[in-house]
Length: 261
Length: 269
Image 1 (cartoon, rainbow over the protein chains, first blue to last red):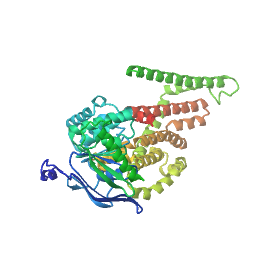
Image 2 (image 1 turned 30 degrees about the vertical axis):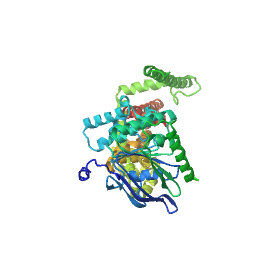
Image 3 (image 1 turned 180 degrees about the vertical axis):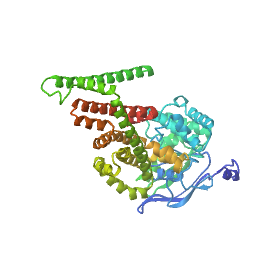
Image 4 (image 1 turned 90 degrees about the vertical axis):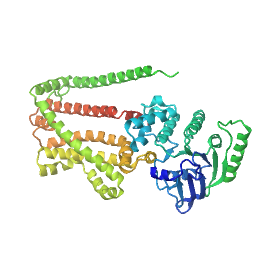
């Protein structure tokens, strides 16, 4: 991995850091979940995949994660073709996937310890990311003692602590109440500004996509494809009551409306 | 307002204390009813000795060291058989749960073997091994193996795929994934298998000893019956009941102590 990184010109803008090259995916013969999706995502961009259920957005995320293999086409991350899950692509799921048998601290240390970091370093690393999500004080608790919002913050810390180049998030805030969701959205924006990970964020919530994303990809079902690719220039944090916000909302709603029916 | 940590802890302790007191009262009530029935004059006290008589008999046998000797003999073979059966059960469960060929190949034979009541094997085992230690340890290990094996198998196969995906995307593969994600995630069903096996091993222990032994609580009960000492039969039964209770309590206490997350997960589900 390190060798490969050395061969790539350092920190130049990489417009195709993630490259999705004519990817199709079918569940069996009849059901095409994704049809010929082509995308390039530059390093550090916060991308939302927005669409109704069945549009293939989660399938696309699982393909990038390596949990699924494309029926056709290839996916590259940092120039390497994806052929399975790996620690270079961190995952945050909708259902809290924290390991209930480990303390919060141990959960966050999981990635660094698999990578073989010595105990002191991985402790510090875990501490850093727990502090980043403002949960340094609950390190010794178990996941079952935490609220849904806290669990998702830990899940983000755990994913980041493994040192991924891409953070993949599958409707991570969908199960949370509106106030907690709002709060976590702000935290995620702050984390993105601090650590600059490339983020692929799946959501069916238009408001959430506009608040978070540098770029929104609207997807549509039958077969799953990208119908709109839009960069959002508005400065963050974005105000919901602004005219621009409302205009974007209406336009995405129109896209999804056309797409869904 | 949320109750403070100390308040909640205080409340928890009060609940625990109330529980212990109620349970002790239940036990006392049971022995009281037994005592009343035995001394009521309506039953033959030779057939149903009172708890006090049983206690006196127990004290007498304990004094000679005989009771301890029988108890130790039983506990030693049970511990060995339980350990062997549990280790094999977990090992087979994990391997068959992960390798589908082996599950299909070995699974049906093991399922058939599981269907044999262990007690049906007692005559055969004695025929083969005689009445020595090996026969009893084998039988206990045999009976322990199946509940542990089947629970481990189902546990390993039923692991939430989300945990596996999370582990993979954090870099865990093959052996690491198995040891650090799959097996820990299957611990709850493995524990319940081990717990069931613990009580089964008591059953099989006594059955094996009844059929032939030179020491042990089963042997002691059988021997007491031959000499018409019903009071001593009761001594054996009560000691077994107490041992079973202690073993299960110890098992759960150890579990909660070693795996503090387990209790929360149990009540959270």
